[in-house]
Image 1: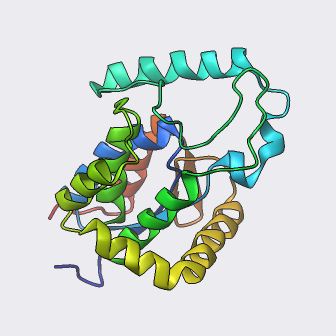
Image 2 (image 1 turned 30 degrees about the horizontal axis):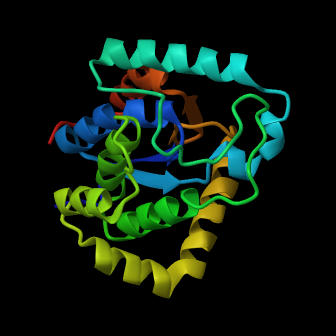
Amino acid sequence: YQSKDFMKIDLYFSYRSPYSFLILPRMIELKEKYEIDINFKVVYPLAIRKPEFFSKKGLPYFLALSIDAKKKAKRLGMSFTTRLKPDPIVQNVLTGKIATNQPYIFDICHLGQMAQIKGVGIEFAFEVSSLIFGGVENWNSDENLSSASKKVGLDLNQLRESVDVHEEEIIGQIKQNQVDQLNAGHHGVPLTVIGDKYFFGQDQFDKIMETLKENGLKER
């Protein structure tokens, strides 16, 4: 199915980033149409990696982000809301303060990394992000995650068992992704890396395509 001649790129992704979600359909289409291998790299959200980033960011920041992301989703024709039920990160949007107890994010990141190990990381991320940013109530319930898993050929119970067995390894891989991301030149997501060039943001997709085509990207 994949030849060693496939072009390779890295895509850094966070399960809390609306912009990470917005780039996924185009990335999946790219993967399906062209001879390209997308190394999908899950990172913990900035709220976990750099909680101090939010220390002076309150409601105006989140409102601006929400308005911008909605506008971009509309332009892309994607179903989208910033009213997340629940938000993958427990955080006070008035003060920006991140809660000490985070019941959702590690679970979903670790399931996502295991899906990547099983070869469907980007597809699983799209299904789960469609629930999160589609405003689905209790997106994190077993019923919803089970349905998302099935769509990419996985069984949620087996996925959880694999995570339980390999959790330390998974945490190590995600932390390594974060080191690789910084070494590539940026801490933000989505971050696409092609050779020694990086492209930060979902709105860089046209430039990403241009660069890939300049490098000889071939259709399947």
